[in-house]
Length: 382
Image (cartoon, rainbow, N blue to C red; front, top):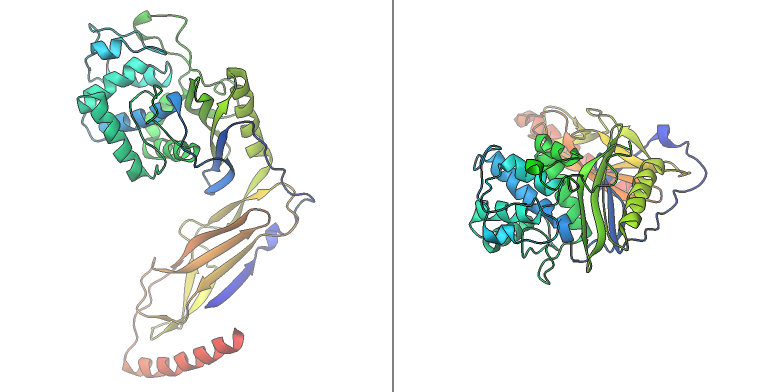
């Protein structure tokens, strides 16, 4: 194995102290920086817990997917069953005479946290809520929700209904990236269906009005689960997704959520250490029309630097060489191992920056000699 270490000189000058860890009062938490793919903090993040209304995000995902696939339209009207009308807790105050549109149901679930709306969606897409819950669990597994099992569409308390904070964060990321246009519904602050229950029209997300870039996602509360929130905020080029659950009150949830957002943006700085398209290493080529091939990353490399990190960030290009031709641009040829003081390592694929054709017979004879020389050289170097 041959390794080439690139010292990122621009990042050597750091402040004096490491970033202070965030001590959350939540029972479980997960904080994630989307641009760099960095988990900033986790606490009991893979423990399967009652998710309350935060699991409505899976119902919304299933509905967004149905829209994307053309199985329903925003103006499609769905019937309201007696079961839906009888749902307790947060509702849209639907009855059997109503035929709400899919668009109204989306807002009813996101803004009003309507349990009745979730049942309408479940029955409209799968026939029964039970069948829909099975589909939710299956689709969740496909999305990478390894600790999630759904018993209903609304998050109504059930010992079989569980999600982890990590799974909720993954689901939030899917909603944001898979359905960017529909995701805008999560920023709606007020919705009233058919002028019913005027006091019950405000989004429960406490961050939307604070001017800190918050644009989603979903609160949750039951006696068993406590108070929780799946949230996201954008500031500049960074998006942060976070999950907290198990807090003792609505006030504690709001305060903890704001603290997490402020901490995530104040305690970390995003730096570009490899611009998109930059060659980070030259790998020797065996039996090729060129003796070397440049290695690059797909989109460049951005990392988060903890505030106060004193030592520099390093990136190490690791590959097996020489690499046998032919080589096609975009072939994965190695890894870039980025080491961030106090934050561990990240590994990104290194790709061929250009094509390298296989050489002719004479070139192969020369290449064979080069191969022997390269082996001896590597042995000396290592």
